[in-house]
Image (cartoon, rainbow over all chains, first blue to last red):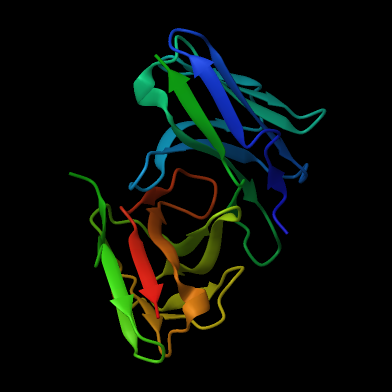
Length: 116
Length: 113
């Protein structure tokens, strides 16, 4: 089965609040992690990524935190807006002997709803 | 514009009638893959290709075939579709494996009756 999982399937926040979406992974050898946003009727869109030699990376209004000790990944969205409503997926690069470059394994997603 | 293009976007077909979903990317990516997305199961990899003429099975390859005759194209073939292949399909491409950002197409919603 997939090694990437999410703590909560749904998250509802008020417009303007900060959102935190969590993700657990089980493979300590994974070296790369990505967050994707999927709006209704569209394909997943890249938000932010982080490599295992970092523990924090910031983008525009988004921050990804990586805690390798507990194998936990989180996505923080500042000042959440209605346009942020979507399903968010985390993915890890699962490395194996047959795929030295690894392959992305996706979690099942968290649906974020932003209330006006 | 850099993009991954899938066709068709929507398809309804009958059991057993062969179909092909096309995928094309204009970013000169070597790595391409197909996923299916089902409620509660997330994105699962069907097949992937690391370069021209190099393809391999993903996590759920049964009932699917792929080919990679050119770098930009990676069609998904269902030789004899069955209702359990009703799903939302995504093609993705990246520079290399899973350690770089994957770009996704808009998806193909397939219904097999």
